[in-house]
Length: 192
Image 1 (cartoon, rainbow, N blue to C red):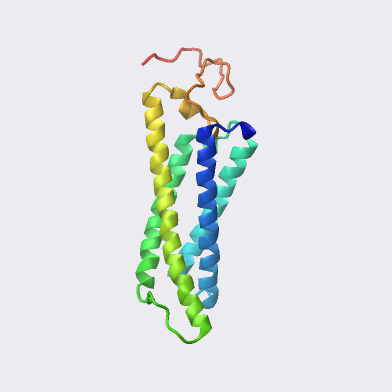
Image 2 (image 1 turned 180 degrees about the horizontal axis):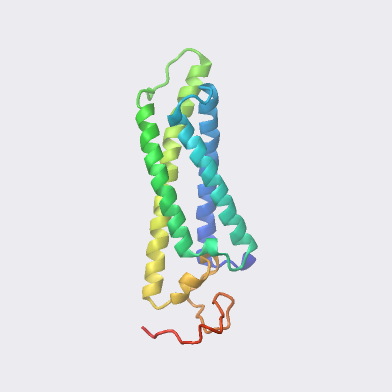
């Protein structure tokens, strides 16, 4: 087990890295599209700005997941919230930008190389912003579904530890680092 990651954690990290790579592609394409139009159109600036914000959030989440054994940013309740909010932002910004890009033809015109390259970049950007939204939505949904199924099976410790280190077989007997110790919390958990 590398870095203490479980099989669930390795899959989660793989999805985060895939999302990170798609976001870098969106960032590069939106920068190229905006450079051609000299950062004039707001519809072209939305993917650029949101991809920068997404890159920062994903970097912080991944770094804390690797650096801290009990990172709150790796817990399912945090990830579901962040990915759901980012999914809503990507959906709304993509809808606005795509409506502005509807006049860009699917088959790019022959002629000036700069215009043809810009047209191809816009077409690629159109595809990748929707792919990124789809990955965010599916990640939020699958994390929510997995968390609910594990909690309904009696694995209440899923909400007390990062998903990257979660295992259904790890039962919380009070000896793990993933619980909150306090002299004020001396009551026992209900058996429901």
